[in-house]
Length: 72
Image 1 (tube, rainbow, N blue to C red):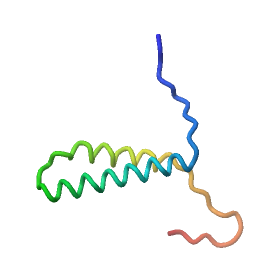
Image 2 (cartoon, one colour):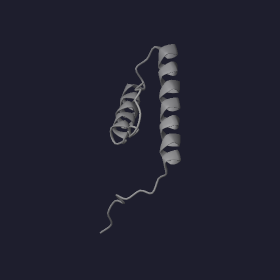
Image 3 (cartoon, helix red, strand yellow):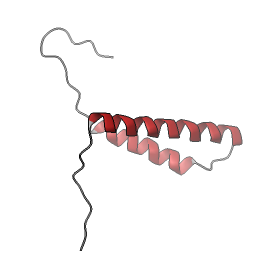
Image 4 (cartoon, helix red, strand yellow):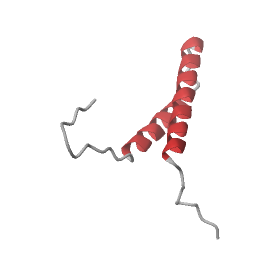
């Protein structure tokens, strides 16, 4: 029986490209929804936002060891 591949070999640039594509798609769908005033893309927009959130939560953010940390 076949199974899903759980090991992905994506670079940081690959993940950045995926995030950018998702954000652009979300923006286009949101703009289209505003113009047509119809909730046709609600489920897709929710799924995109959920995926972007899960990707963000898996990131590891580093602080410099020396010097003051200035967060943004």
